[in-house]
Amino acid sequence: VKVVDAGVFSLTADNITQVQIRSAYSGHSGISYFDAVGYSWDPDYTIGDNLNEGLLISYDNTTTLDWQGFSLDGGVNKTILGNTTIQMPADGGHSIQVFGNNSLGTMFESNLRYFTTNALSPDITVNSPISNLLYGTTPPDFSLSIPDPDLDSTWYSLDDGTTNIPFSGLTGTIDQTEWDKFGNGTVEITFYANDTANNIDQEDVTVRKDIFSPVITINSPTIAEEFDYMPIFGITIDEANLDEFWYTIDNGVHNYTI
View 1: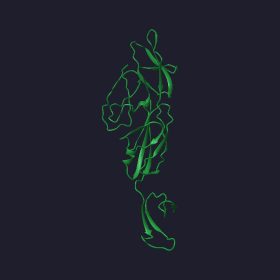
View 2 (view 1 turned 90 degrees about the vertical axis):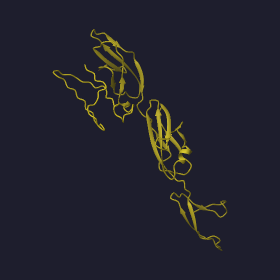
View 3 (view 1 turned 60 degrees about the vertical axis):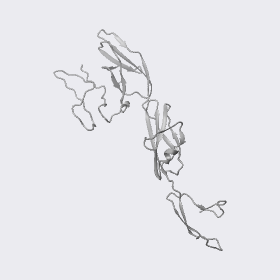
View 4 (view 1 turned 90 degrees about the horizontal axis):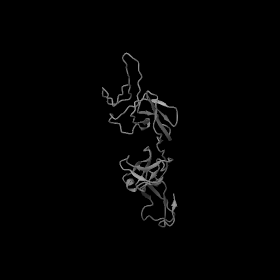
């Protein structure tokens, strides 16, 4: 048996989309097993990128064994050659045990190891603010739904993660200082959630911001113009996001919507 560990590539490449591994035998037949492929050689790889690819079974053995295997959750023994990676079990509680026997038929077994898997990221739903809604100088309130029993921490960012604002609970108000950094236009708010297994999810919502007041020009009547009847007025309002307007003739005691 030949074990290849930390093998190197003979050719360099700017990027890799597929890796093919072949084995050849001279004068006899054989079987090859590939337990795992590491990507630490890739400068774009970050430890943890492939955590969901499988569950590593790693153990120490000081006995010469003819056969080795493991049992997951009390199931049928499956043969392995040593440390290996298996398909990640479903989320929840599990147990695993490693077995082996030698040439005399003596069976060895490890203690049961109990563990819990959690490979699912939190699922964030942004209830508010609603996408494309218009806000002014006052930052919006937010409300989220994150149905994850293992939720650990939450935060948001208005600048793609450069500045992160942590918060507790599922409701709150966007930080005024961060909101003030943006002028007229759109603001993208990204909410993040992390669970105890370090699974992270994010959800974006884009809102509009308008910090300019409407500009009203009274075209008629003109200043000091006299009338013996109710005058007709004409105004121009420069405002792209006009919502409503009204007038008063008694300094706001009575307002009349136009």
